[in-house]
Length: 542
Image 1: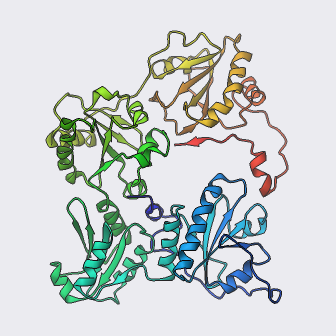
Image 2: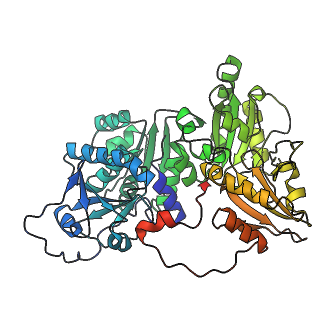
């Protein structure tokens, strides 16, 4: 499974770009300005190079036009460039009626303002020369995904099936295939089904109205059938005769049933970096998990090199069906390179086999209260106990270092955080960091200098806490570095610091009691100056 169902999340959250709600041209197109006779739009690597001077011409000449707004300094744009060119080549080889183009955003502020571009890269799709309502592409930035998304806009999103042979050929083609069986192809339910198919890129879609195919697959009413080459092999979604086909319900059904009952934490997920909880959200299936609102993840830690551990997977899988859509079952191999996962749960290799459950919204973690053999019954019982609130979450904490307060920067862990941070006689400034975070490393010298500057102030404490190895009951940390100020007093007040990360500004903040003095506003900077003049340091988000 991969990350091609991200638009479904947007559908369920009710924001722009949902499945089945691609923008159609509304009203007549704007009048196009006259271009110089014989003028041609330049190309680079098969991509049209657009500006405010030639965009109208490109829209006139290309009825289906995908435009990437990029910035030359943007790392994500550089990573996208070869994929974008490859997508253009794939579509050109098929003679697809769609063209790819790009715009240098910082060099074209008029266009970025017109089309509401607030970040890079941004991809927008224009049809029939209409520049008023382009559809934004929010899917994965891989060549085949971009190409398939465009194919389903300029061509059919599903295949019409007339006989058993065509159905079987479609089912054999992919691991996951959704076929809509509709008695009347003029019904609104068919339009809903086809609209959904436009964005569900990792599912192949077909539809039919043939009575013999209803009979072949044992159907008596309109039904969407998901065929898959794993687990139970087939899942049916009958269409409610009274309410019709609901786009959201069908989306959730397809997402949930297109996932394996047990997902393996695999090597591709590990390459995304040890971002603790997000390691689990970064599984290939994560957009589906989000869209289906599967917030509870049950992890079985086993050593795959041991036969007795591998045998436990059968019981783990047997326990999964009743929790489909509620709990995602994940297997983590401790013999693989999963040290960061073990660290996040406070586990060691030798503790496998064992179970842990995490709610990825609250980040609360749960462990079995009793040491019992891992069976289908014990796995199910643990899940039920957590879901019913019968198991208390646990918090991670490193041990308190003997010399935690001997250096200018004090070392906090979960076990001494409350005592230090909420000391009524101290003003405590804490950096919450991750050892691998580049932004944390960049600000480390300024933090050390700050601690050195105030080391003789009895009422000020400069501290740091590794938020990947320690958890707090008071609040969660969702990005690195996070800086929080805990002023002296009985109110347990917490102030988040969001300004420049340098010694001078830190000092002003402390000397002013946890606020920054008012300063004259600087004049607005141009689009091209934003990167160089950002006043707030970046943060590595979870």
